[in-house]
Every structure is written in structure tokens, then in C-alpha cells.
Length: 457
Image (cartoon, rainbow, N blue to C red; front, side, top):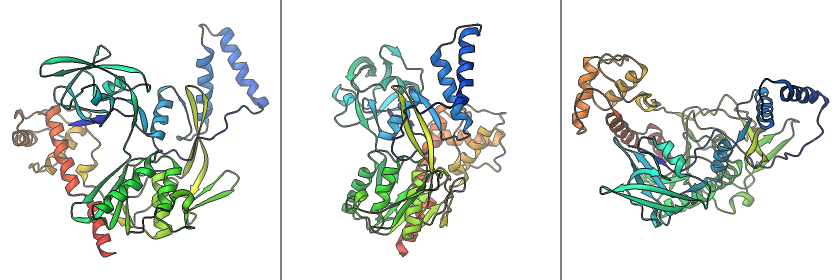
């Protein structure tokens, strides 16, 4: 099943603290052309145009002229999304919604959350939000209606045992877990800390995770940064400092004049909490920004191995300036260097031990869940690779849905207790993804390589 928490999604690689000064400086004479253009449009354009629209267009144009994908103008929902990502909190009801083959249902509830207090239960079917049906909506569309400003009220109608129930609750501040922990299946003395982003609570959650794993018997740690797009430098500095001796370099930040600030490990970041146990770090092509700062710091200053694939390669730093209540500018202000002075921008960090996901684990998803005999597409090719990984016999993944693929689909559907139609649907694709997700968890090459390394060190 596809589950989505009622949270805000993150974006790729921002860093440092939001401390840009947005105050207006002296306007250069060249900007008279901008004002002249504005006046011409306001006075002579064939239909009325709002000054706000023109101003936003000018700002967006200036940001686009930089040719920097990480320098952007954010307004309204985009601003709220970044703010939620930085804080790892949002206005919500503390529930997770998942899509089944026929409806949306509540998958989990946070203890003490508005949803739990209102009487919502796991398994409730989501019917309406504030009186408007969401039964034909996707998970993300329904979730966006439930989220909102902290302190505001939302009414969710659910179906339970054939009856409709209206549950009214006040949205509260919900904090996202950016760090999850587990013990390695093959060696319970190895703890795994997976960091999904670097947000305001991440360093505290990491520290709590290390303590919890120690109590469970962990003597060595794997820090999984795969798929982590980055985040706040402050939290990367704190976690980086925890794994280094005081005085060792975490990162160097260089502004446009060439002036370099060196950040070193110490109590100002880790408050005396250290992780002295053996470490290994997992990275991949989606590990970026703050993820690369942490990985580079531990690799070059402590010799921690990087296991996986070459990282994304984002060597710049952004700050955020709020320019109005509903808008802000995210601007690249510096570049960062590893402790040894390397700028990894557009190059990434090379792994010490290279491992990669199998082809079936690299499938990004399906654009359609409905495939049948005679179809030919990239989705069919992905389906064939996935079915092969699930143990079905398909001689060649050629992208053509022929009789052999049809038979494989029927066999898979029968094994999963689904109608053996020989055509894929939402239920078939979800069952396939679930099976392969479980297989990946049990056969993770990077985790296995990290455990093997740590057992020898």
C-alpha cells in the first residue's frame, strides 16, 4: 500500500540559517529600465494587470537570470513548504493516510494527536474533508486539504463499520521524525540510523537514536544518508561534531570574496556528546548538500568509509530572506569545501566501497497501473524487471506485454490472492511494490557491505 503522512514535503539542498538581510539598498541607475517597463505596462497594456503580478514577475526574472537552480523566489504554498521542511513541523492532525485498491484509509495515529483525541481509528475510511468529498482524490490531494494553519479547525468525515462519523479537531503542531533507527538484521551489535533530512529537530533526534541503540546493544553504527536531499547546515554541524574529536574540521564555507570560515568540532555544536564507536556512512546519487557535508566531514577528518554510489554533488550554500508575510527569497551565498578543501559541486563524493541497487530497485515508479496484452512502453519494461525480481519467468524485459508477460502477471496475481486477470491494476502494482520493498529491506547490498566492514574494524 502507498502511505503518505499528513506532512509537508522537503526540497533539495538548502543550508545555513535564514539570516539574509532583505532591507532595500541603493537602487542602481540601470533599474530605471525596470521602472519604465512597469509604467508602460500599467499605462498602455491592453488589459489591466496588477502591480503584484508584475512585481512577482520581475523578481522571478531576476532569480532566473542567475542561472542557479537553487536560488529561487518562493511565495505562498512554496514558502510554506520550505518553512515546514526547515522546521520539520506543520499544522496537522497527527494521522497517516494510505491508498488501498478501493479507498483512502487511516494507517496510523500519533499518540496524543488531535486525530486520536477526536476518536479517529486506524482503518477508518476517509470520505470528506470540511464537507467536500475526497473519495476520488489521491492521497496527496486529500492530505493537502487536511493540513493547514496551526490552531485552525478541520472536520474529517470517516466511514467506520458502514456508518459515517464527523470528527472535528483543531490542527496542532506536528513534528516529523527525520531520524529512524533499527538494528542490522545480520548483526544486532550494529545500529542503523537513517536520516531523511536535516531539519531543526534532526540533531536531537540523532542523539536520542544513538542512545536508544546503545541500550539495545549496538556497539557500531551505520548512518544511512541515501535519498537525503540536505537541509540545515546547523544540524549537519552538530551531528558532524558528535563523530569527530574537538578541533577537527567539519566543513569550510567560502564567500564570493574568497574569505573562508572553518567550522570545527567542539562543545558549541555537540554539547559534549560524542559517538566514538566505529562508523560507516551510506550515500547514493540523491544524497546532497548537508548530507554531503556530514559524509565528507567524517570521511576526510576521521576516515569513515562511504558506502554506496557517488553522491549528488551540491557544493553551494543557500540562505533564506523573508521579503513579505507570504514570500521569501532562497539565494546561493557561498560555496562549501570538504575538510581537505575539495569542492564537490557537480562531482559528488566518491564511495570508498561501491555498491549499487539492483535494476529492479532503481525503478522510479509507474506512470500507469493499467497494462495489458499488446501494450508496449517503458512501464511494461519496468513491470517485467519487477516481475523477474519477484520470481516470475520472463526471458527478456523488452517492454512488450506479450503472452509470457501475461502469464507471469496471472501467476503473480494468483500467488497474491488477487483476481488472475493477466492485466495489471492498482492492487497488482501495489502488491508488487510491497513485495519488492520487503525484498530490498532483507537484501540491501549497501547495508550488507557496511556490516561486513564494521565487523572487521
